[in-house]
Amino acid sequence: MNRLFFQPHQAGLSKVEAAEHTLRNINPDVQFETHNYNITTMEHFSHFMDRISYGALQEGKAVDLILSCVDNFEARMAINAACNELGQIWMESGVSENAVSGHIQLIIPGETACFACAPPLVVAANIDEKTLKREGVCAASLPTTMGVVAGILVQNVLKYLLKFGTVSHYLGYNAMQDFFPTMAMKANPTCDDRYCRKQQDDYKKKEAERPKKVVEEVVEEEVVHEENDWGIELVSEQTEEELHAASGPIPDLPEGITVAYTIPEKEPGASGGETVEETEQSLEELMAKMRTM
Image (tube, rainbow, N blue to C red):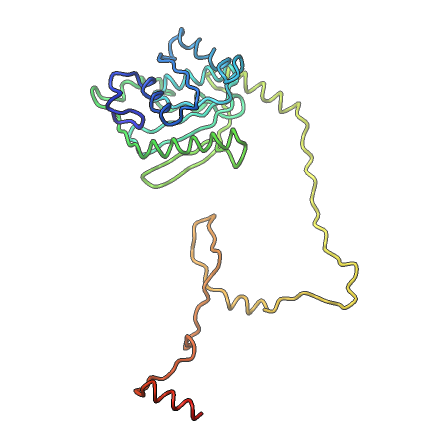
C-alpha cells in the first residue's frame, strides 16, 4: 500500500486491475485496456508488440506514444527492444532506489540514445539486479518524489503531443538539492541492440535526403519618414547619466534570472519630504492662526 494508486480495499487485486479502477474513477471517459502479464517472456512480448502496432484508438493503427513506468531493468529493456524494432517513440521514466531522485527521457529510435545505448551500471556490467536488493526489504518509496516525476512526465507528454514549448530529451530531478539536470543524448553507433543500429542508419539516410534549410539573413531596415516638414524629433527627457543615477544596484542573481526594476539608493542626507514641526497648540488655535495669515 506504499504507492500512489493503491488503496486498502483493493487488496487482492493485481496492480494493473487496481490502477485501472482508480483511474476509471478519476476519469470515466478514458478508454482502458489492461493486460496483466510479464512482457519479458517471449509469449507476452509478441502480444505486447502487436498492441503497440495495432492498439491505437483507431483500430489497426500504431499508438502515438508509449510511457514506460515500470520498476525494473528487464522490463525497460523489453520495452526498448520492442520500440527499436518497430521504430516507436516512447518516454522512459523512473525513481531511484533511495526514492529521492528520478528522471524522464524521450527516446526516438535512431535519433536519440535508446535505453541500451547508455544503460545503467547494473546492465552494463551484466550484474543481476536482484542481487542489489536485500531479502524481505522493500525499496524506499516517497509519493512526493513519484508525484514530481509523474508530473514532469505528463507535462512532457502534453508538449510532445500538442506541439508547444520545448520537449525535454532528458530531465532529471534531485530532491536533496532541488536540482533539475537536463541534456540530450545521441544514439550510440556501437549499441548492443541491432535494431537500434538499423534505426540509426535509416535516420542518417533520411537526414541526407532531406533538403537543407537555407537560413536567410534578416536585415532590419531603418524607419525613414517620407515627410517631416516641421523637423520633429523624438528624444528622451532624461540623459544617460540621469537614467543611470535613477537606477539602483543589481543584486547577484543566478544565471537566467534578471530583475524587472531596481530601487534607487537614497542620497545621503536626503529627507523623505517636507515635515511640519511639532507644536503644543490646539487645533482651534492653529485654525485661528491660519485665518490671520
